[in-house]
Image (cartoon, rainbow, N blue to C red; front, top):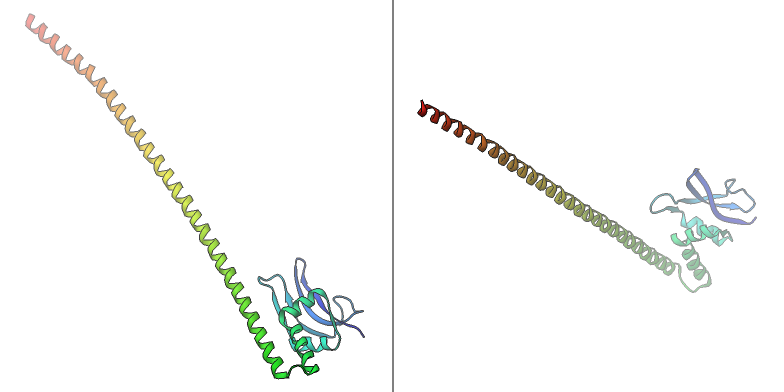
Length: 194
C-alpha cells in the first residue's frame, strides 16, 4: 500500500487549516488517513506549524512520499534532516549520539535564525511606526502653524477694521464738533449783536 504524507484541509472558506497526515495514496484528500502527524495553519502570522518529528521520520523511513508542500514543512521542522542523519547511522558513518547531537545543533541554529528574523521584523515594524508618527507630527505642526497664521491674519484684519472704524468715527465726530463750535460761535455773534 503506497503511503503519502500530505495536507488534509479543514477550517472554513477563506480560512484554511491543515492537518499533516500519512494517508493511502488512493484515499480522498480529506478522507481516511493512517496517522495524524501534525497541523499547519497558514492564516496566522507567522504560520503555525506543529509536527511530531519522530512519527514523520518513521513514515519517511518506511517509504512514505511527501507532497511538495509537506516536504517543505517536514524540512522546515527538521524531519528530513533527522531522516538523513538516521540513514548515516544505519550505514555506520555516525553513532546515534553523534546524530542526535548534530540534530540538536541544527535545531538550535534554526531557532536562532527564526528568532533573529522575528526580531528584524519587529524592529522594521517599530521603525515604520516611528516614521509614521514623525510624518504625523510634521503634518500636525504644519497644520498648527497654518491655523496660527490664519488666526493672526484674522486678528490683524479685525485690528485694521477697528482702527478704520475708530478713524471713521473720529472723522464723523470732528465735523460734528466743528458744526457745534460754528453754531456756538454764531450764537455768540447773535448775542453780541443783540
